[in-house]
Image (cartoon, rainbow, N blue to C red; front, side, top):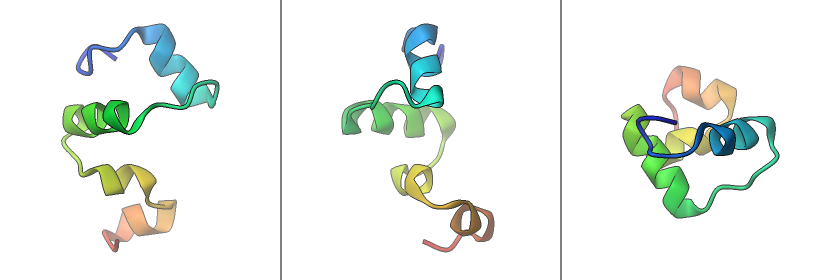
Length: 52
């Protein structure tokens, strides 16, 4: 939350499925994590193997 500039309560709601982030918010989150946006949409198997 701190790296994204999001309120911790907002991040918590996203993590619990209580909020649907906009594509802009997902882009900010991906940048803060140092990953491509597509990585956040990959299923668990794809993320582990790096296949997208």
